[in-house]
Image 1 (cartoon, each protein chain N blue to C red):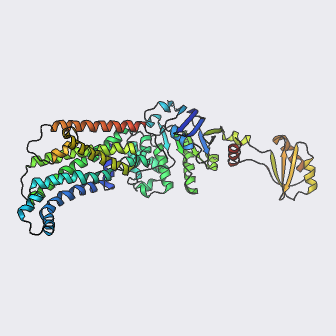
Image 2 (cartoon, rainbow over the protein chains, first blue to last red):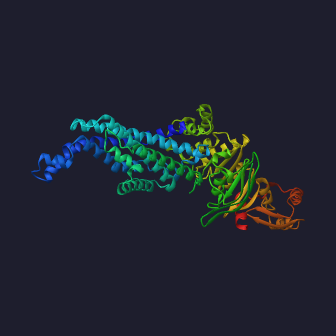
Image 3 (spheres, chains in turn green, yellow):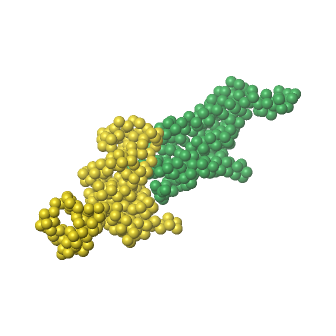
Length: 257
Length: 304
């Protein structure tokens, strides 16, 4: 298991996966405050001549909370896209290209292979979520004002991170089922966005992993009473996805041409 | 060591294996030969525990392949036809990663021993992405042997290689024989089988056509013709006289080479030799014509 984790870390570093993901978070963390503070007002002024500063403020939401909520939404919408297509090869490509054949024949266990991927990339995404939220907090604080408490920012970063672990597990499960990287990316996004919209439409967010994203974007001082329930359900779903992945791997025929 | 009985494999509508039966003894080098698409790799995948048989029995070592949960339970070494490695890892890192499957500690000694055996010690720290096909094949053999298994299954280990690469792989297979390993190796290059194998199985369209020790197969397919080259070219008179000898059924003289078809290769061979000695005819060469494995393979595949 330790060697499996070491191998995944090497993969993340040498294939620049970690760098791509980190830059993705960093990009939105730094760009969102700058966009809201400087670029968007200029665009609005050129589109709507004579618009007042007050009206601009109301339209763009020039507070730290508004900027950070926008960042959380960007990470969910565009960040999920980056994550799904950066990691879609994580296991699908290994199955498709038969790179898992030699490790399996050498005695590598399916659980070790799968868990190593989820632990390494899930942890990386959790850390990037936390770092991204903190950078966004710093930037938006400098450009606007420090309205939010650091604790709520850390909590939101961690909640987003837990959601990213769920997303990683989803990528691994679809990869094992579909075995095609691009299709894995699309199915992951369809599942993630599907759950988000179903949760919103039926108002059952607190029972779905997407509830973590909604809670994270609130940056509430006191978290919602249903947060523990959402977290427990998310962890439960992650375990179910891992179980489905392992069952599928066990039944799989290898080295197919 | 390996007992396969009436093995069938179906892929949806395609019936790939139609009752393969094969037996491999301990320490034997078994050549599994057949044309492309005959079912060699499907059989090898089942033997390695990577694919499940549709029906039939397949015992590898002492394990029934259809009853295992994980391929590694078979304790074999396996080299796929086109071994795929992580291109961003070095040869050393790959072996280290694979060694860790059965041992928690890095076994540098074993890894270096394997790299040296396959001639990759100088490329140990290079990323595999830059390796040639021959180097990948040799690394593949090292990965198959890393846990020192008793049974080694090699799927077309030499087929896509240049002559030098093929020669390297055959040298490694010969080493395995000396180590006492049981080796099953599939190929469509018959000269490779003739060089290293003890026993041969010929497969065509998913069926085992013949399975015999190589020496027996060649002996059974000896053509009863002596090719004789004399110092002086044989004339028609001599040809006619040989034809009249007991046991000689036919004589041809093509390009100064006499070809005498005999009834009994031993007795008639002696008789022919005696005749030339009596006639004081100097002989340049006197050879019993042998079919090579290629001829036998074509006969077997086309005949059945």
